[in-house]
Length: 133
Picture 1 (spheres, rainbow, N blue to C red):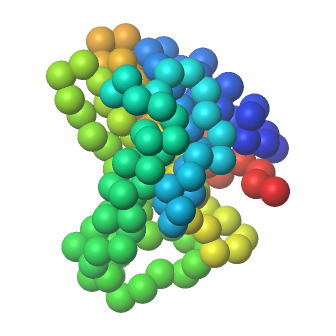
Picture 2: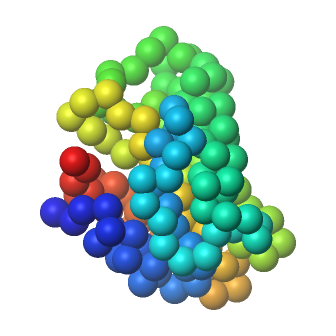
């Protein structure tokens, strides 16, 4: 089972990966980063901005199962959020945990070189194997 650093390095092996981070969406702090930060910003700013989006998806009933009726703390409220723009994709993949978790993987993927479907599959696999602590 990979730890944070191993997980992020494995994410960067995806074709087209520009940068990745493990972020706590409650605080907006990055728990680990690798590669370039998106948008020409620093990793801390990018993590805080991605956390705002993650919180929006996780806390609003329109995006959660069972019309927002709540969720088990070990199960993330959404699997992932995908943002696409002219030259890249941003994939936020929420992690399952044995404790109340508010952590997600953020992958910044080049649109021309990357494969969004493959990235989602690999992030899902990594999210299931990542060991925090």
